[in-house]
Image (cartoon, rainbow, N blue to C red; front, side):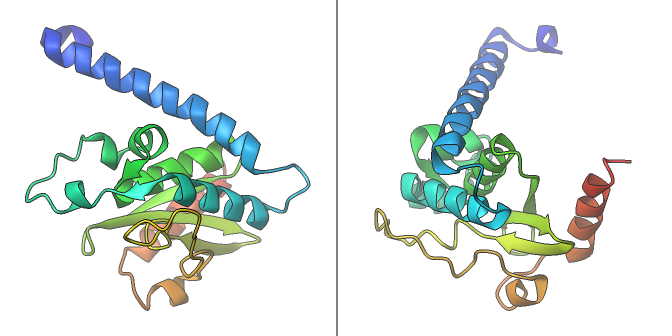
Length: 180
């Protein structure tokens, strides 16, 4: 409850909520400007992937901190969308938000072993993985976007990533069944 928090904590919660709402509004505008209704789902996913990567830069300074503050904007959608700087969590959460704004169900995938996060989507009964962070070169190269980690199957992604694949498959199953 907000009333149990200190005044400073309440102000931070309100500010964070306002930034998330601002990021959501921006995501809706970005998504609408990036896709068209005539595109296939995969074309929409690619357009949103490219839009995010072109407008966001990997936050090397935050990533290299000894004990980064996981609550910092770089770890959230608002960091990627509003500040145009993020670490993998910010990319993944921003991509999830952009896809939601476009009406596509995408989930955020986290790997404790890798200390990394990316996204998954299910199309036509197949799960595909999208790692916007790995597709954004360091140092940032402006308009250049890689697609090396776009729409990979689990077997393909497992060449470079480790995660609890069964858990995320179950999560996607439950979402397809309406969360029942």
